Structure formats: C-alpha cells, structure tokens
Length: 521
Image (cartoon, rainbow, N blue to C red; front, top):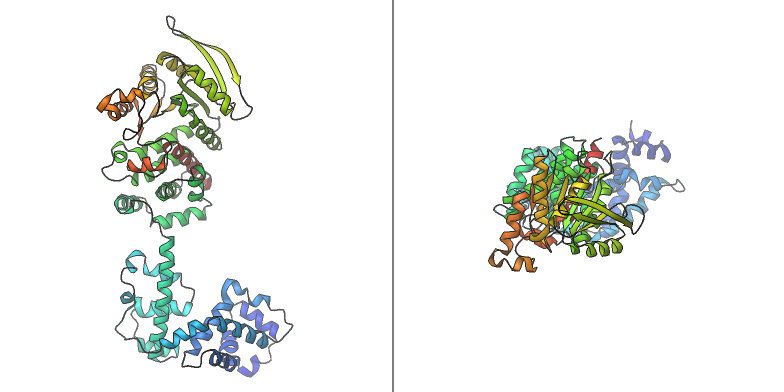
C-alpha cells in the first residue's frame, strides 16, 4: 500500500493496526508521517546532531510497552497526530538530560572496542545472553547480538540499519550503557549471603548434580510455582540470615525439579540443599546437619510417625510454640494428625509451662518396683490446638522413658539447655535401646549445643569436658545431631550451617516440603 493510501485510513484503524504490530503502519506513522514533528520537538529540546531515528524508535518502544498501555488510553477526542505530539513533547522533555548525554557521546567509538572491554569484572558475574535479553530496547539488543556475539561486519550491519558506521558505534555505545545498567540492577537481585565464598563450591556442585542453573534460577522457578521461600523462611524466624533463605531455596528447588509429590520425600531433598550450604571442615559438615534436618522433616511428614516429642529442660518448653506450627503445617498433607508432647524434668515446671502456654498438663506417677506409669489426671488450660499438646513432668529418667513408651513416640529432639546430661540425652538413649530391642521405629535427634554456651551446673561440673560431654551424649543416641542453638541464628551460623535456629529450621523444612509437594501435585 502506498503512502497516499495510508492517508485514507482512519485514526481508529491506525490504532487497531498498531495494537496488532503492523510493521508497515509503524513505519508510516512514526518514521514518515510524524517525522517532521518529532524532529522539531527533538531540535527544541536538544539542538545538536543526534541520531533522530534512534530516538524516535525509543518513543515507539515507550508507547509499545505494557501491551501499548499508553496508546490504549487514547479516546479519539482529538486527532491521533495531535495526541502523539503531546506524548512526544512530554517524553522528550523528561529525557532532556539523557539527550544532552547523547550529544556528549557523538564522537565515534573505535571499531576494535568490544562490549567485553566495557564490562571488566561485571561480565563474569552474569551470562551476557541473559543480560541482553533483559534489555528493554529491542534495537539495542539486536546491535549487541550482531556486533558482539555474532561478530557481524559493522559496515554490513550499518547498511542494513540504514545508518552510518559512526552512528552505529554510537548506538552500540548507548546499548552498552543500558546493558551495564541491567547487569548492575541484576547484581542487586543476585543471591548474596553470609560466608558466600566458602560455601559456593559445594553449592555449585549441588546445582550441577541436580540440573539447576543457579540460585537465582532456582528462586525464579519456585516463584513461578507459587513458592516464595523468602516469605516462608522469614515467616518462621524473621531474624534469620540471608543464607538460610537461599539454602531453603536450593533445597526446595531440588524437590520441585525432581517432581516429588510426597512431602516426606520433599523434606529429604531439602536436606540435600541445606547440606550443600555447610561450610567445609565445620562442625555442621562433620555431623551432616543439613541432611539430618531433611531426614527429621521427612520423619515428621511420614505417616509412620504418629507422635513427636520434645525432650527438654523445662525452661525450653517454649519450643512447643514451634512444635504447634510444625504440626499445623505437617497436618496439611498428613492423613493422620501428628501428635505433639513435651517431656521434661520436674512436675511443677510442667504444670507452670502448661498453664502459661495453654497446653494440657498430664500428671503422672511412676512405680519403680513394677515399672508402671499411671496417669493421675489431665488438665487442659485452653481449647483447640494448644490443648492438644500434652505436657509431662518426670521425676527421673525412668519415668521419662515410661512416658515415651506410653505415648509411642517415633521421633524426638533433645533440648540443649538445662539438664541435658541428667535427663534429655539419657531418656533418648535408654528409650532408643528399648525401641531397637522391641522392633519399634524411633528417630532420635540430638540438639548438640555448640561451643559450650550452656553453663548449667551439670555442664560446668564436667570442667574441660563441658561441651564435649553433652556433644558425646548426643552422638550415642542421635540419628541426626544438630549444631548450635535451638533458637539463635548467629550460633548456628557459627557452627558452619546457616543463620537460623535449629527449632525454627524444623518448621521451615516442613513448610517448604509441604509447599513443594503441593506445587508438584
């Protein structure tokens, strides 16, 4: 169709054909009919030698963005050219500073200069292709691809674009500036976290083994599935470190990539991601704490596990708050709700903790000669899920073991605070011996304490063996042994794992596993 024929087309038809991407109409309207008007506006805002076709192209891309959002606001109460004039004036007025910058770049760029010369250390941090794809100027993208990646002859490309070679290099220069801006923006979004340099070799090996491109790619894949690991993890413990978020991002991505639909299997896969974040040579790596967390999560999600117990000195019973959250999340995919109990030293302490937290206090008596446990009474201090948590207080280890038998505990975790050498570890170890002898499944987790942070008399009395004793007791019975504090992120980080308390980590593992299973279902 000749230009005179285009002049007969109504504004409404012009708009309709623009919206469907009619290239002939684009050339007619932007680079023929309206060019004199655009040139006048450009001269007004920057009276210097510029590649006006390039700037008009930028205006076109601006109008095209967001599915022609701006053009769709045109209501036909004026002529289309009048409306375009107003839009162009506002657009170039806002870009006056950039236009002046273009003027300063009018000198030709040397032909031998390459985009890689502009990006010394940046280019190693991000794949060039990915960066170019994210540029919002299609013309700039094409110039970089043709000149830098395809190594096309500049003279040939200049002829194809109907520009001089000098203008081509100026276009490339502006394209490189935009590319650098994209890369710097991406750098801010890229995964960065504590002790990154020491962790990355194992992380990269894990990514490669599971066919995953990068941590950022993992995050994008999960978000596309509706899984926001940052929200999940920080929702469990807001003060966690960034490395905790990325560790769970990797683990959850592994589960999703494998297409796992069983939450227990997802939890085990998440453990592989956590393990990849352990620092080489650290306590966490030696104990394989990452895998341990994954296996614990798998146990809590398995239907074979009907009862989960916290073994603790009673001031640690506040951990039951975490247990409630764990059970609530796990029960989303479990057929049988997970029962949660607390088993600690001291009946008065158990009563107080129950009353404060709204749990059900279970008063027991233990007859040593007959090894019989009797429930005297149960006192619920609330209704609903809190009352479902049963809180026991024992007078000694044997009563603690009897409580574990009564509730048929298949999984437990010891506290690392008061009475570890007088109650928690001893109950877990004795009960595990009984479970093995009687063909019972029991997964025992030892919360290892860390570096002597616990200065209870039981530990202090051990003298130089303070940390070594509680740690060694955990090794005796633990199927998995944690490192660091049950709640303090910095202490767990110090052990070479991630900056998140061990108990909150259990909740994060279960929550991410459930999310992965539901996304793959």
